[in-house]
Amino acid sequence: MLKKLILIQTALLTVLLTASCGFISELWAPADVVKDQQGGGGSSSSSPGGSSGPTVYVAGYIDNGGTYQALYWKDGVSNTLSPGVFSKANSIVLSGSNILISGYNTISPYACYWYNGDTPTNLNNSPNGSEAYSINIYNGIVYSAGYTNDGGLNKIATYWSNTTLYNLNAGVNSQANSVFVCDGTIFTAGHTNNSYACYWSNNTRFDLSGGANSGANSIYVSGGVVYTGGYTNDGVVPHACYWTNANPVPVNLSGGQRSAVNSLMVSGGTVYSCGFIRPLSPTIACYWIGTTMYILGGLTNSEAKSITVDNGTVYVAGYYSNTTDHTYHACYWKNGVLVDLGGDGINDWYATGVVVK
Figure 1 (cartoon, helix red, strand yellow):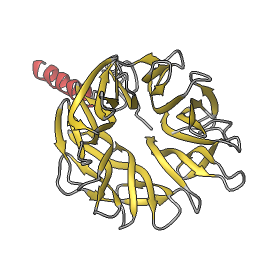
Figure 2 (cartoon, rainbow, N blue to C red):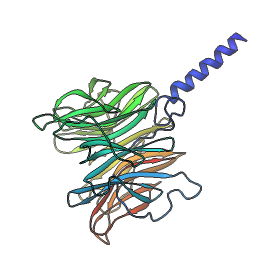
Figure 3 (cartoon, one colour):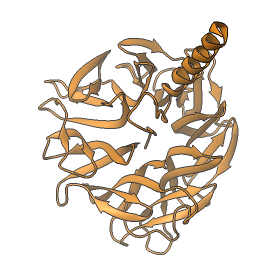
């Protein structure tokens, strides 16, 4: 009986440890936590997933000639964040029924996150500027990653735990683009002051083998392996790739073309990533399952900014150039099928993050 009880306890501990590392953690986090990343507004051309599918949440912003307006969509219906205020939404996560979105605005000032669209929570910022590119939540604590500026207006890679600021050891002109929390360890990805791709485990930096002008845009931990998506640089153009741990040989996804990974996650042991390729022109949105590439954007300028997977269905958020009104439209693709989130024919609309529940 005692042996059976020990086996049951061991199995439960294994489930708990597995659940504690990832975007969905009902046992260790307040509820399911799904990660990020670019947004627009308007109405969807179809119901995201329909009545039988999950609810699709997308974050993004409108660019009115350099003046930004943050917003998000819930099943294709747009919701403005901080109306009338210069603002930008970069990343979105869910915690139970709560929606958290990171970005910046001129009320806070600068780096902030919104909780259910309410007044933005001011992060502990540099007076010279800051921005939060990514958001995650673990055990009720909100983690954000981005940069602050020093007195000389140089970017400093930063993450926040709730509103407490922590500078990462990467020097000036560094940046953190993504944050993921696993078993209480804070993983961030970005680049150093020398524009070399890297990731941090808490405050310990691991340099990645990408060459000068490389970068890490997304990070995910699964099965004890740290996956970092971004791009290497051969001295001429960037090449999409991902790294496992700090392996000196990245997995090349580029096929020899100018490209980059913007977002990455792991589901069922398979790596899903998205970004762009640019054989010549235009820039084309795409995603990869493992190392197999799927084109999304057709012949118009487009880019994929965020990816998530739900029950085998792949959701990718980004934007494309509408050939009718000649502006960028925010959108997402569901298993490669375009869902247009709209545009106004005047301004450019971008989607930066997608989660589903």
